[in-house]
Amino acid sequence: MAPIERRSGRKRALVNGEDIEKKNTLKRSLRQRTDTVKKEKPSTDKVNNNNINIDKKKVLESSSKENVEPPSLASNLPKALSCLNRVQPGIQGFIPHGLHSNNILYRLQHNAMGITRERSLRQAVVQSYSDQLANYRILTTASPFDRRVTAMQWHPTLPTTVAVGSKGGDLILWDFTKTEGITFMQGIGAGGSVTHLQFDTTDPSFIYTSSIDGKVSRQDFHGNNKTVFLNTMDWSYWYCSLDVNYRSNVLVSGDNLGNTVLMTRQGEKVWSHRLHKSKVTHCEFNKQCEWLLVTASTDKMVKMWDIRMVSGRKSALYELPHDRPINSAYFSPDCSRLLTTDQNSEIRVYGGPLWDKMERTIPHPHRFFQHITPIKASWHPIHELIVIGRYPDPQFPGYHHGENRTIDVFDANTGDMVCQMLDGSAKGIISLCQFNRDGSYLAAGMGLNTLIWTDVAKLTTQGALSVNKTISGIGLNPNRGSNTSQRRRNRRNNNDDEVDKLKKKLKTKTKTKTQTKTKTQTKSKSSRR
Image (tube, rainbow, N blue to C red; front, side, top):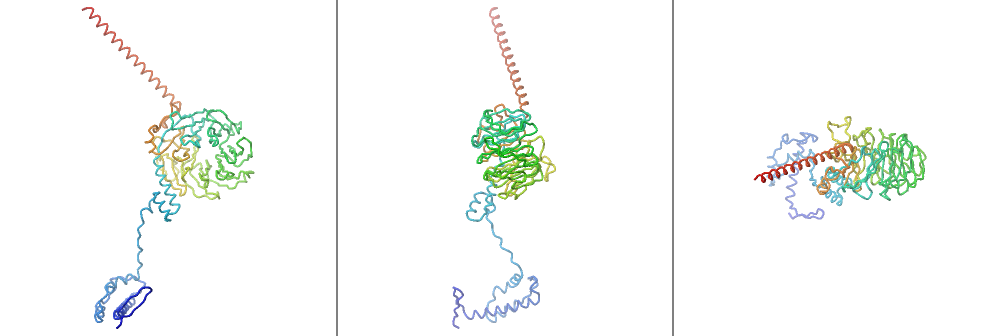
């Protein structure tokens, strides 16, 4: 027979007619065998190789009569039939290591290729920085106060300078890179507690303060040019919080009775209303929206206000109820989120611009105690991280005996704890934590002490600064006591020095006496001779 030409798409193949007839006969024989197997056992059941009995000899005889070689499919027919009614397992692909890794270089490369999402890129950035935070240790300490630390604020332009206020009204301006870099301003003592302080960004040599003596004032660290904006003249009525809006040129302050006062920076009162039922623990302006104000109170309520339309307690834009009294409510650095800290065991993150939307709740032990400064969570200036001191609570889930009083760092996007900062020399409860403007240093208030934390690598490179350094006779080691105990130690040291001096004088006198005796003896001997 002449060869037959066939076309299938763009491909052409020349097939011999005899070969086609042989393959057709093979297909018919295979169909007959499969039909007999299906009759013996239904197709819904799985076919086992042991239960199928196929007469291979008949297939071979039929193929030999037609002078056709037995195909490989006939010998593997039981396996082929068993695969008809069985689901094939999926092929397991190989995932490159870079897709699992949190390395920022991998994530940036995949983001450029369109493989990863923005969220995974953020997590990679947070992971790299959290590994660095885990290496933070105490760089230096200062304890110039005889009462606990109540407020602190970093300098707006100097990354190594921090201002700290105490319960006795004392203020310090501290540049911890200098041995004599501390400026101390004496307070009034009992009843002069600094509740909040903030640098004047227009002139950083001045600072705004609110205190329990009932005053809201602006002053420098030398005690000169002091301006008092508010004064209650009543020891049972004081101011607890303040903030300054430089774009609108206004200042706001809240007191312990729930009142909030808005005034210009020149001292002219704009309005005064009782916006909460009890103490206004925190008030803050949104830096991206100059008319938006947030206030937090011990009446278990956080409220958002438009300062242009405040007429009373019911004129709030948003009300965010909590289960416990609230210590603070900080806007994030980009002003898109709000971080609140209650007085028991809960941190909340709210998202804007609809501020009534709570993104997540983070359980954390930081219960309130009368004789410590209320614990407040704060933001990292660059990354979306939350930092807060831990006060272990036996009633908190997951508590174990001997739990450390660490500084905990959380990821605001997931609510997971990314690391815990711990130094063996700081065993107290850390109430206040604030990063400087670039996040390279962390200032923490622990009782009477102010601690500066940084990376361990910086401790080795900066030989001039040692761990737990004492500042120019004023500062103390965090494991030591107050100024009175330090003065006692200094007196003892002075007494010891005087005793050593007396001993040296006595030794010199005895030496001179022995020398004179030996001289007189030698002279007497020579005279006798």
